[in-house]
Length: 269
Image 1 (tube, rainbow, N blue to C red):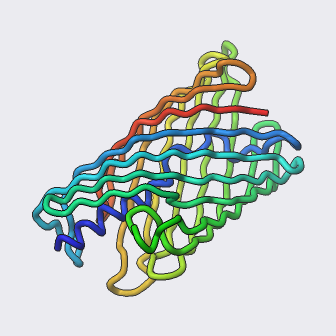
Image 2 (cartoon, one colour):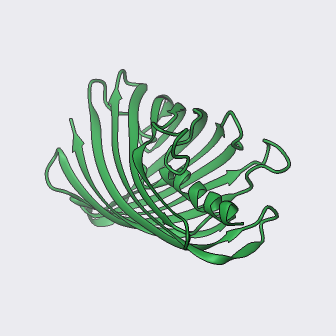
Image 3 (tube, rainbow, N blue to C red):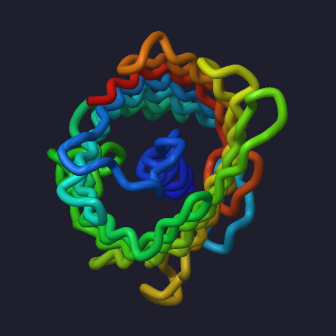
């Protein structure tokens, strides 16, 4: 049971990459332009373990994690945007008599996004992503997934002008992630609502959902997780912005539920 409880807590570490995606990833970058986002997010969770049938088992564990997540995207043409997003992670797991810690490259995402349609207020895009294995996955499974994964994503965004110079946007995205090896494939859904009450300020509410499909075998991973995030972005000037936010995992199946605070610096070129 101890090993199963640790596996559940470790799964929460491997699912950590959903934190704080860029606000307007649906909209293409201008040709020759782009943006860089550097994010840091401490995360913590306390949760019981589970047995092979999904029932809670005694013994409370804790997870503390620090993610450092650079994000870069660049406009190749008016329709094509490419990007790279590595994720460094330090983790500390305490299960009473057993303790684990590690630091390394959790994963790195390489993606290409194609804008199918762009109007004055609407945009539709498709995106393909390759997620590389993390460094040291064989030695520390709580940091790095030893297998790559591949994701196909559809994205839609809509913006609107509001009275008194305000503006708002909404976006939705759905994805299928294929994960070779022993891991189950995943369905993913993201929703973002953003409002600019002032020209230099943006307020965002976001939802990130991950649902494991249990298609890797009858005794394989069985999980789901639902996150909500609230953040504020302030434009320092035309190129630089700062972001502060809070994320909470609201519900899930066979995963630890935690929370995180995040800070990010944005640079546009």
